[in-house]
Length: 162
Picture 1 (cartoon, helix red, strand yellow):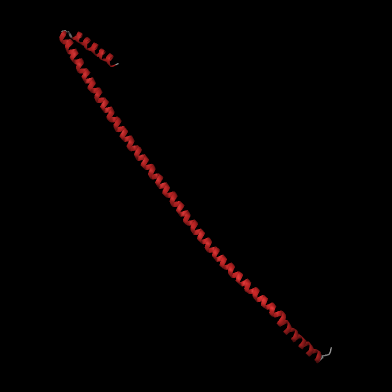
Picture 2: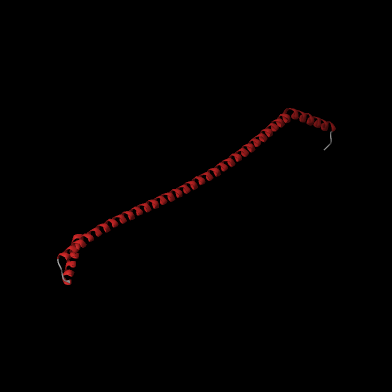
């Protein structure tokens, strides 16, 4: 293998010319396209990160809103529970008050009827006493006749009350 300087120089010159032509017509546009592609991918990554950050913020906002809604719902349920307990207590208190009032009215009515009955009984007893006394005065009776008279009168009283 012999070393030929002319061939060597032609090869090097050809290589340099080819490199310059490729650099100008192939590598330049190719590297430019690759740079544009790199910038496009970089901008898409930044958009995706911004979108992800926005989505995360939206998700956090939704979680906060959901937590707030849960707290409000719990508060409403608790308020309704307290309100129903309060109403139940008021109804029970009202019912007890009404029952006490009705009971007191019934006791007063019973007392009034009892007093009327006692008054009527006293009136009747006094009438009977007067009748007994008048019968005793009319007849002078011995003790056995007097006992029979009282028994008859008591029997008459029992028949009149029935």
